[in-house]
Image (cartoon, rainbow, N blue to C red; front, side, top):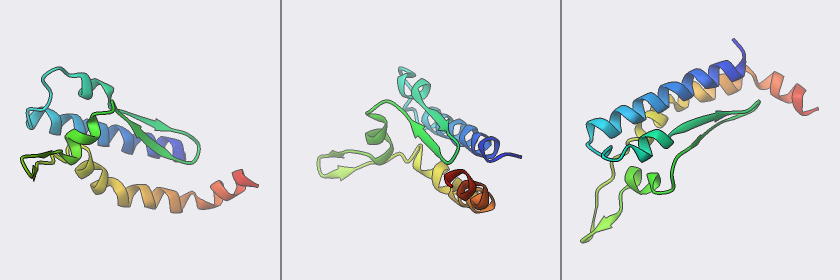
Length: 100
């Protein structure tokens, strides 16, 4: 499996779990955030994108002195972080070769 394919597999998994978390947490009324979630794979990295307010839904915002985060995205990403690191280390030689 190529590095891009491995990153794409993990990206799909993270987006799927994030969307499930939005729906389960009842934060999916307009579906705008849900539809905006995407992963981007380039040769050396896995990146994610969403509408601007997605950060505040994930991390929470302070209301009356209380912050209520949902972690709809952070939780699946953190769970997959070791897989991402493993892929990066497996393909480290290929990455170095591409850079030279």
